[in-house]
Image 1: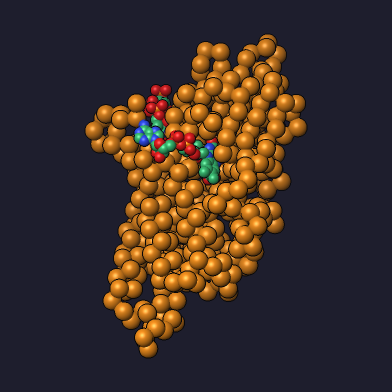
Image 2 (image 1 turned 60 degrees about the horizontal axis):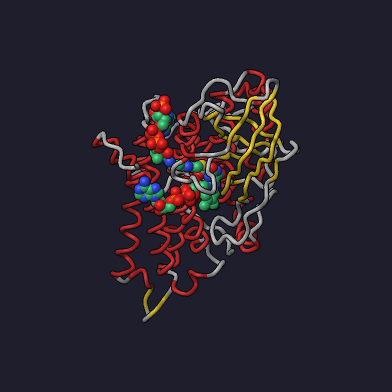
Length: 392
Ligand code: TGC
Ligand code: FAD
């Protein structure tokens, strides 16, 4: 990739709404992405390889458990700082942000919220430092949007459980040290459990040939009579609400992250439009290209305002699932549209790895599907405003 010249757009002076701590955290993440992610990410994506070198840096900028209390190794930051970190990381690459989202909101969050004190002490500091990487197994081959139908199950054997079943499309699975797995007990109640690499009967084959999110390793989790010690069950919450609670936190981070991808595409296209000359003038001087750029900055600004307000509500514990769905859905669609328009502004150059746009565009095809599809988030809004569920 050519040199990273990113300059963040802030059309409505939103930095003025951020505290000194927010700016410090955001700027540290921004600098780290420029220094450590941009130079290596295009090659990692071309080779479809997870760049293991970034794990340590992600931990250092506080991207593993930004809002987890410091006593457990987290950064003890607020929700806006968490969002800003996700924004900056996804400005670099959605796959890298995925690794941070999964670790923070889908692995550390359930241990922090639903785990015993022993589980918190045992796992959270190692996850915060990047010594352990985790994954989250909810989706199954036959149950994606409808996780309540899951068939992965545990049987109580007296002094331990036995786990059987399979999870699919799991980020970080191929190398994760631990997996937070959701399975039904004999009464059909969903329980969360911590499965450790090395347990007999537990395998994690990698999913190959993805055209999207190529810097993130995706795989299956296969459980063939895996013996799970009783102390590995998350004791404090069960039912579908437990994994859905984790998704609220991850979807919130994605809403911020998508703004980062959109900002990078817009900034690249803006710079290119001023440099590229056709018919003796920069293409940025033509009305057609200005329309594209003006609409991009308008949509980015609207998303920034929506998401900042969501962050304020989240800090006050007032953000609802439906508000989070609206922001995730809006911002990912906004980003994917901007990536497509920005790609056109670059003409043929837009399809090359010299620029980040095509990589963002392909990544966002996963982001618009995972953590609840675009349709599911619309149905969550529909249910919220009508009181009528249209899923079933
Ligand atoms: P429903 O009947 O609505 O709810 C079941 C129970 O859950 C409670 N609940 C929630 N609790 C906490 N937080 C939420 N957000 C909640 N939403 C619902 C609800 O009150 C109820 O509780 P109770 O006590 O009455 O049992 O459930 P449903 O089966 O009708 O499903 C609703 C639906 C479709 C919205 C839900 O299933 C859904 O969100 N589906 C999408 C699945 C999804 O998002 N999967 C994501 C997998 S993880 C992933 O993609 C990671 S990608 C990671 C990366 O790389 O970044
Ligand atoms: P389906 O549920 O089969 O949906 C197919 C289509 O039908 C979609 O367009 C959907 O919107 C539509 N549809 C479904 N139900 C309805 C309805 N009621 N009304 C109208 N339309 C409907 N999962 C994890 O658990 N952990 C992970 O770490 C994880 N990482 C992922 C990483 C990647 C790269 C990807 C691509 C996925 C990942 N997922 C993960 C899985 C992801 O959450 C699911 O793909 C997603 O929830 C959708 O499930 P599905 O793919 O089975 O699609």
